[in-house]
Image 1 (tube, rainbow, N blue to C red):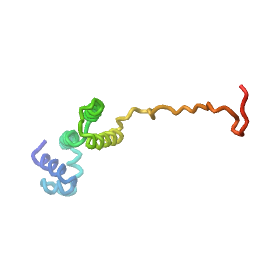
Image 2 (cartoon, rainbow, N blue to C red):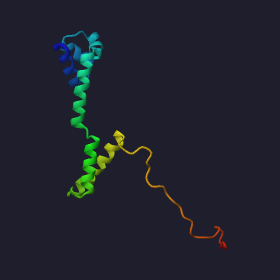
Image 3 (cartoon, one colour):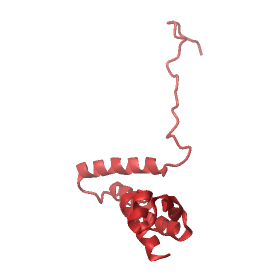
Length: 124
């Protein structure tokens, strides 16, 4: 990757605007999308963005470690733990960490009253 491509990539990471980044890096505005799709630039952007995401967004392992600490009572601040539990739940849902197809225990209705519902008893 050339120095100019790297400058473009850094400006693009900073602004999110390919056209403006191309101009600042010394390319023409019309060349912005082309340079953004170049193999080295694209790989560099993906690598940097992936690294940024890991720093900013909790991973599945982090969420599980926190939930385990709360379950074991390692988290002493009850109000803070409650708020963080809610955050962990929301992050898990957003990132799809929930078990697929699990909707909780099935409801079971047991009719143990006996009778037909019209006031008459049912003989057994």
